[in-house]
Length: 247
Image 1 (cartoon, one colour):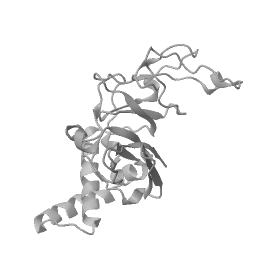
Image 2 (tube, one colour; image 1 turned 90 degrees about the horizontal axis):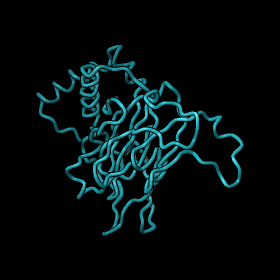
Image 3 (cartoon, helix red, strand yellow; image 1 turned 30 degrees about the vertical axis):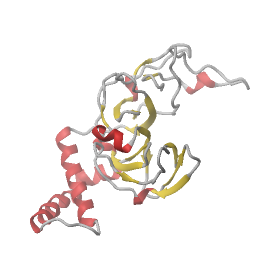
């Protein structure tokens, strides 16, 4: 995937016998740059995220397999002016209808609210959440929970969150995408710098352009919807920005 939103797919066999001076992976438009390379199967989805808080998810099979390595590929996401792709992830493909997905996410969020030590809902809210959370014990929802992935999103000013992969709906390649964060608050939280799948037992390291580093357990990062801004996980200094996130 490139910063300009192009993607291409090649067989691994196209990258055999790589010499010390490297091998051309793809042709780039003037001013474009390679962002990320990932291995995948035809049972996966591609997720592209941009610095201005947009994300698109589409099946790997929407990207043709190229026989050579000298084309620019095809459009993965349609970018607005001054925006660029900052991350590509490979997710397991899922077939789930909108109604089931929305019901599952409601039940999951209710279950998490009930399990929180600082739950402050009114009695009627608690009763509603209890009823919603019971659906997590239904066989279809149990299967969804078993196959669920979680997406970590981090911004330049140190804000982050975890969201369900089901919250990032599958669409066609080449669209404008959906919100991956609260785009109305980019001035407050900073541009997106990283998005990738994580598991509860993972830890991440965030590095700033001021040379400071912080190590954070993933299970301590708030779980919320993809369109929210998240919470501060790295208290950066004034004029200091997060530039790299690894796990």
